[in-house]
Length: 322
Image (spheres, helix red, strand yellow):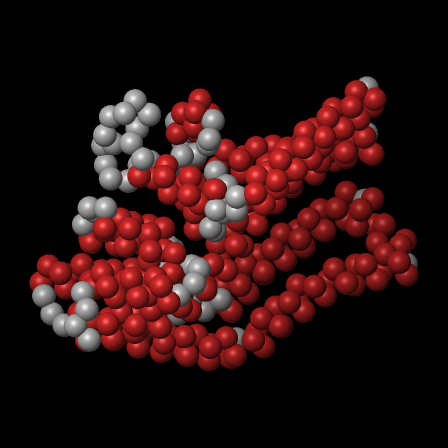
C-alpha cells in the first residue's frame, strides 16, 4: 500500500514539474502572451462567428470549455472568482481549484506515508485546501489598502484635470497613466469599457464591484448624481479627496491611541499558553490532571471557551472602524 502511495505521489510531482517547466519556457519566450490573449478574449466575437450579446464578454472560469461550463453552474463560484480578481491573480479559477486539489492530495499522501493516520492526514489536507484561500484574502486586503492610499491623489489629479478644461474621461485617463497597480489598471479597465460603448454610469458601477473600497463608492455615487442633477464636478471630487485624507489622519490617531490596547490583548491571549508550555517542561505531572481526569478536561474546555469569548470581546473593543 505504501509503495502504491509513493508511486502516485511521484507521478503527481513529476507531472507538476513538467508542467511548470513548460509554463516557464512559454513565459520566458513570450512574456506578454498571457495579457494579450486575455484582452483578445475579452472583446473577441463568439466561437461560431456571431456577434456577442454585450460589449464585454463573460469572464472565463477555466480554459477547458467543459470545466468552464461546470463551474458556471456551481453556486457561489462567482464570489470566489471576484476574490481572485480583487487579489489581482492572473490565473483562472479552474487553475486555482486545481492547485488546491493537488496541494491537498500531495499533503494527504505525504502525511499518510509518514504517520499512517487517516485523521491527521485529513486535517493536513484540509489545512492545505484553505491555505490558498487565506493567501488570496491577505493579498486582496493589501491590494485594497494600497488602492485606498492611492485614491486621494488620483481624485485630486482628476479634479485638477477637470478645472483645466478636460473631460471626465480624460481625467480618468491621466490617473490611469500616472498610477501603478491597483488604481492605474483598474481605472484603465473602466476607461476601456467606456471607450467600447458602455455608459459612464455602468462602467463606474463595474469599478465599484471590482474594488472593495467604501471611499471609492462615495466618489462613484457623487459622479453619478452630478451627471443626473448637475453641479461642479471638480469641486465635488476635490472635496471627497480632502475628506479621505482627513479620514487617514483620524485613522492614524486612532491607531496610535489603540496600540496599547492591542499590545495588552496580545499579552493576555499569549500568557496562558506560555504558562502552559513552561509548566509542561518544568512540571508535567502538575498538568496531567487537566488532560487525564474527566473533570480536568471539562475545566480546560470551559476555560478555552471563556478565552475565545474574551478574545472576541477584546477584538470588538480595540477594533475601531472609521
